[in-house]
Amino acid sequence: MSIKHNLQNIKSTLPEDVTLVAVSKTKPVSDIMEAYDAGHRVFGENKIQEMVEKHEQMPDDIQWHMIGHVQRNKVKYMASFVSMIHGIDSLRLLEEVNKQAMKHDRIIDCLLQIKIASEDSKFGMTFNDAKALLTSEALSELKNIKVVGVMGMATFTNDQDQLNDEFSYLKKCYDELQSSHSNFKIISMGMSGDYQLAIDCGSTMVRVGSSIFGARNYN
Image (cartoon, rainbow, N blue to C red; front, side, top):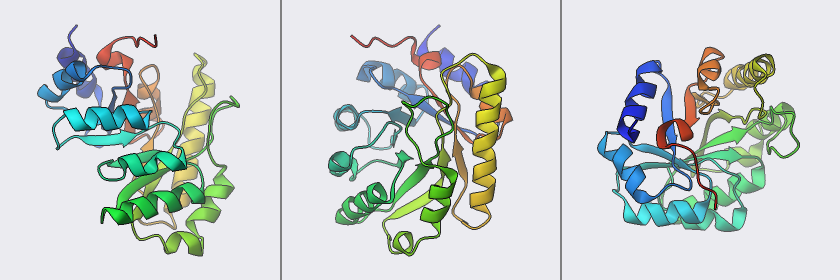
């Protein structure tokens, strides 16, 4: 199956209000252009340097999403073009994004990463930390970022009950935070193996890579 066919098949299963982020990490520009030529415009990368290099080689109307863990000292490299940053896990990171966005006279959409997985290797804030951040005076002073929702990385497991519990927990967090934060409109959860379940649990944005581009080569 071609990348175009994979994209069409996945999009045909998505509700209208769910955004597909095509995760293009480790994939060459030629593969991403195949998806672009098929009409897709939203791509996700997990390494800033790789995203910068691809951005420089590809059309300007692409929406680049940073979906990996973000180091504060690297925000400056993507601040001029990134559309959304998924992995915000501290006020200090938000302050850095705001500072760099200001230099380019931009407002960057951000998602708070809530820790929903049982694995220690996954990053994220607790629900209480997120709630405190959203109601803080410090956040209200940041004019060049907009917190528009939450994201979560589920445990790497085939246990559907566990995945359902984790996705449902993120939806519950979203609902509680949204009630006092009018900008909230996005729940980013679900990947190639579990995005249908994530959508059933309320996801509005799914991050799908291998089901579009094929297995990754990490060599």
